Image 1 (cartoon, one colour):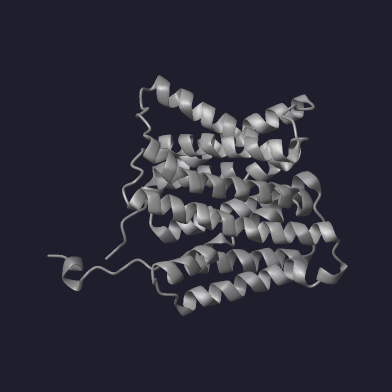
Image 2: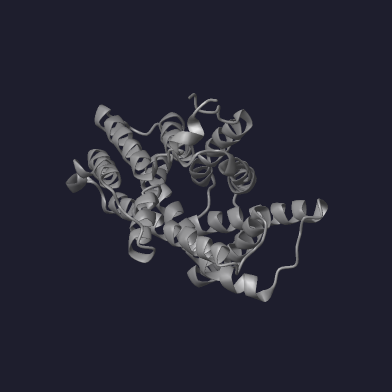
Length: 305
């Protein structure tokens, strides 16, 4: 029996969303501001755009204090994620920083094993080995010759994956437990504004201001909020319920793949054949680590009368 065709609209939305969020690391580098400043503007402007849209289309629901309490930990985790990821972008470039952040799929799987007693199969372990073999080709071969800032960027990129996994797990728990029952767009809006508030406190602690030095920084940060934080994620949220998990995992790999290509084209990142082999192995490993085969239907349900 032939498999049903995948919904074309959902596929296009998924591809479009992944392509849009692949630009976020590029826009961070184009803005002439510190990493925490760019993170703040991304979340504040993105949250403000969503808030205006929800109010105009009358989709805003009252947010209870309990909602805010349950969203505070995910917002803090995402603030830490952005602070580390943006620093990693400035140290190692948009392409590698984005690839390193995508290692969060393995942290998520390990957390599922430790917390929810979910099984880890040989496919997952093979994905881990391939991904880290690719990472070794990218940075491990020449590790001793890399500067301290570059090594720091690699470490921050990997820690980004840990912080993002904490964000995903705590958001999932808040939703599945029924403590947060907001629509996806409003959930993204509230979390963005909470995250912006936390980043504002971080800026005060760092002693940094919010002044933007030039027009390029303004349009880069506005595009970061509108394209990466709002449009990209709305497309992904719309598409995900209509596609198999394996297709979602494969298409989401467009983000690190395109980020790496943009890094090479726009910033003349020096790239060897070994680097391309490394990114290829890492992407294959991440896909294998996230892919779950679709459960087969019972034999009687597939028979044609």
